[in-house]
Each structure stands twice: as C-alpha cells, then as structure tokens.
Image 1 (tube, rainbow, N blue to C red):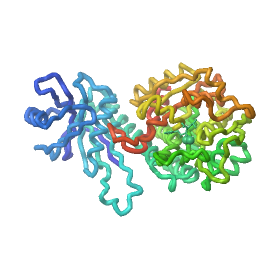
Image 2: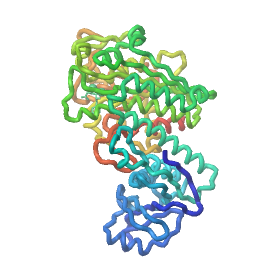
Image 3: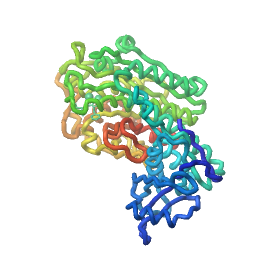
Image 4: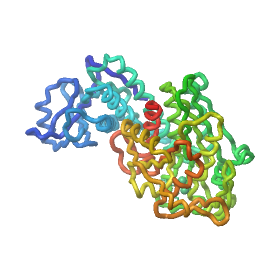
Length: 495
Ligand code: BES
Ligand code: MN
Ligand code: ZN
C-alpha cells in the first residue's frame, strides 16, 4: 500500500509531480507548482517544443536537474483556483504513471485544505494495481508507487494530517471495491464474497470499531422466505448468501440502510446474454462491494452515523435448476413476482434486501440501494455518469450535494408513474419486466414497490460507471472503479 504524507519542507523524493495548465500567455502554457517555487523558464520552453497542451489526462515525464524526474500532469485551463475534482484527476493521472517507483512529491496548487485533500485523494486513488492473478508474468507487473508526499504550505495546519489520513481510508476501501470487482467469478462466489467481507470487518476492528457481520446461507434464506435471492441463485452450483454488516457508533445521530446488488456473475440465466462482452458481468456485484466497503470506511472515519448494510449475493446461471420465464417467486414479506425475464435478476435480489432492511425495529432515516441494474442506464447516461432515482427530492438533493463534493458524477432521473402499469402481471402481484423504453426508470419503479412511501429512499444505478472497459483516465483505472463509495461516505459526513 502506498504511504501518504504531507510536507512543507525539503523534497526528498527523486520524482517531482507538477501541474501544467494551458493559458493565454505567450507560450500558451503555465507550470503550476503550488507552494513550491521553481525556475520554470527553460523547462517551459522545452514543454512547448514537445507539443505539451496541459490538457487533463496529459502526463509528461522529463529528466530533471535537482530531482531525477519531473512529471507534468494536465490541469486544463489555467485558473486562479482549481476545483477539487480537477486536482483529484490530475494527481490520479500522474500517480497511475508512476508504477514501479519508490517515491514522488506532488507539488500542485493547494490553496485550501480542501485542495490538499483532493490532491492526496486523487494521488492515492491512482496508485492502484491489481496483480493478484498474474502468475508467471507477475515480476514484469510493476507495483504501485511506494510513497506519495503532498507538498503544501498548509502541511503544519492541524487539519492537514486528518485530511491525509482520510484520503488513505478512502483509497483503501475504494481498492477493496475494485479488488472485489476485478476478482473473476471463478474466485468470487456468494460464499467467498461473504468470507472476504467477514475478514475485512475483522481487520477493521470488528466489535471494537462498532462493526458486526452475519451471513444467511441458502438453507436459512429458503426457510425465512427470501424468494428473490433463492430464485436468482438456484441455477448455480455456488449457492446464494445474504450478508449483513452493521456499524453502530455509540452516539449515532442518524441511521441509514444500504442495500447493494451482489450478483457475482450475471449470465442472464435462461435468458442467456450474448457472449460478446459477457465477461464484464463479473462486475455485477459492484453495488454490494460499494455499500459494504463504504460501511467500513464510515466506521474507519468514526462517523456518528449508524449504518445497516445488506448485500444479497447470488450467481445468475442457466441450468436445469434455474428459474424459468413464467416462474413465480415470493419476495421476503409476501409480494409475488412473475419472472418473465431471468436476466432482470438484480431487482429480485434487491427487493428481498430492501424489505429485510426495513424489517428491523430500529427506525431508519433513509435507505439507499446501489446496483449495476440496467443496460438502459448506460444508454441514457453513458459510462461515466450514474443515475439517482428517489421518492424524496430532499434526500436526493442532499445526496447530489455530496456528489458535488466527492467528485462522482450522478444525475437525477424521474420515476414516472405512468410506466408503473407496464409491470402489472395477470397472474402475480407484479412482473419483473415492463416497458422497454425507459428501462432504467421501470427498474426503479419496480424497486419503489418495496420501500415504505414515507421512508426517504435513493436508488443508484451505476451500471455504466462501475466497470471501466475503456482506457484509464484521471484516478480511474481499467476494470472496477469503486464508484458510489465516496459519495456515500460524504453523505454520511454531511448527515
Ligand atoms: N446486470 C445487468 C445490467 C447491466 C448491463 C449492468 C450492462 C452493466 C452493464 C442486469 O441484470 C440486466 O441484465 N438487466 C437487463 C434488464 C432487462 C432484461 C429488463 C438489461 O438491462 O438488459
Ligand atoms: Mn441481468
Ligand atoms: Zn445483473
């Protein structure tokens, strides 16, 4: 794990990371070294000759004089103050380019503690490498940079150290999400997901940290009436689980429930998906990973907010045991569902999770589900913007405020009542699919049926952003991204 620190003193690293912005100056470029004063004239001239632009995601390495290597990372247009997300991405793009190295000092513009935190967070998030399954080629696979130092005159501020510690926690638990997503279904089943989280809870301090974890196995799920989880998981040799993690700090001001979709692999079941791109469905447990890791991060930050987290885990497989189109299942609590399409499985396991989450005697102040729920989400918003649906405009705006701070792109989507009738079934209480048009909203309307109308609820569809199949950018690697964790943490910090 990369060590994070902050300094305003002597630079000890061999690598120095500086910002580069485009400007209206003669050269069109400006070096942004924050609180570090350096002579930039000659370097600037060579950068211009090299065709540098200072655009976001441009990272240029050049040999240095007093240090071995200078790394310029693009900040976009010159500004008197850079937004935290611009700094996060620039720092992340740089640290992604530093694999295999020992240490780098990041001298980027940090005019506030907020920007110190952003540089630290971005740099830490970019220093991620997933090499668990590299075998004979492992030695050629460079590890992430060993140490990152943020250079800022705010280093001596009493809030600097906590900001660095927070960045480390955010990155640690984002890495847990990414690792879980990147782990293939051969090595991540509902059972092994549960075991990994039991271990993570223990590492996080367990009961001493206010954390508890429990798991229901397939027998308990069956006898207790979790028809959604059983129905989705019954086609697989890897039986389903319901994982429950709770964080109960002594002086909790509020209590939230998180529910995350945990399909360890989604083949589509008997409605088998096309082969092309099916491998990305190892990421169909991203919601579960995000809510579990967010809970641990909230505990690590000792936030005074109680969290009850539920991860319904199942593998959606075709077999002679699999749920057939037209089968009727009974969700926990009694609603019956006609499964017209076994590939619309996420909503079935989430329905069980949502009802269970509301069954505890502890009063909830809000409930949030996180899921890679629909292909329609990707069509509507692309691969970098997630959707928020809700029964409470107030809760939704609170969350969007948190997103503006976390830097995660979420966008509000409606739940139009007129689409609800398309989910009617002639034989059961509801069908699991409805209108194709507005498929993301129809899925949201399905889930809404399982939430008490007076309980503020958010449905986060992260289908596109959870798993990056394109090139790495900013602090976002290829593969699992960890999206939703940071916004959930900020929401808990604001509550
Ligand atoms: N896991 C998929 C949704 C998905 C698609 C996530 C692409 C990430 C990228 C989900 O279980 C699914 O298959 N949804 C169906 C629902 C449909 C049958 C109503 C879909 O979106 O096609
Ligand atoms: Mn599916
Ligand atoms: Zn799915």
